[in-house]
Amino acid sequence: MRHDGTSELFAYWNRLRGTRAAPERREIAPASIRKYLADTFIVQAIGPGEPRFRLAGTRICSVYGRELRGASFASFWQLKDRSNIVRLIKNSMTNKSVVQLTYEGKSTRGRRALFELILLPLASEANERHLIGMVISLGRPFWLESDPVVENRLQSISIIDPRYPARGLPGDSILTAPENTASTTLPAARTIISRKVGHLLVFDGGRTSD
Image 1 (cartoon, one colour):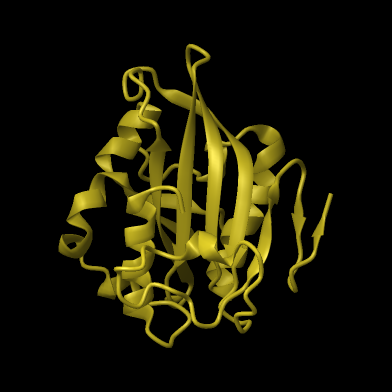
Image 2 (spheres, rainbow, N blue to C red):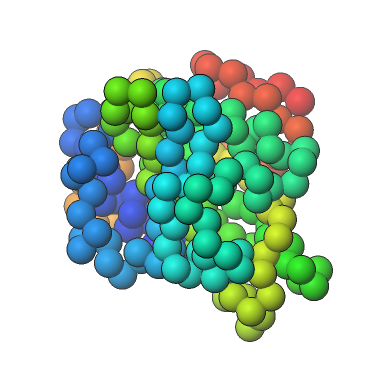
């Protein structure tokens, strides 16, 4: 991970889950992540419905220039990326895999900024599934939060699937928090995808297809 915020949220999530695939939503304590609450969000999917923002931090809403609660998560992405985004979210919710993205945000005035995003699955609740995530700007351009971002464009995707044992594959370290943070690694995880994204289809078992 390229930013302390996403590393710290991952470390917190990982401590909560222990040996489970994912922690429960009720276990998330806002006070424990207060430093980054403005950059944190929760996505919810009810039944077969599309993933939507249940909550979004104030800085995220400022970056996009509006309140995000209830908005479709996929609607913020360029059209050719939307099916991949929905697939990634649903795969994370179902298989309890961790997703880390880098993407370019384009503003109303055509300005561009690079962002890092992490999606961390939470335990399923009856007919509802949730993810907790974070969006962090890499570089903090001067215009951010005054010139709203209107379109996201995928740059790269990395996925960790806790169902598989770690094998020391290249790229596994992208989801490892700083060495001085306790219990930050996923003891049973491997990288499925770590590559430049054009049009990408994601299959269980780590295969990708253009």
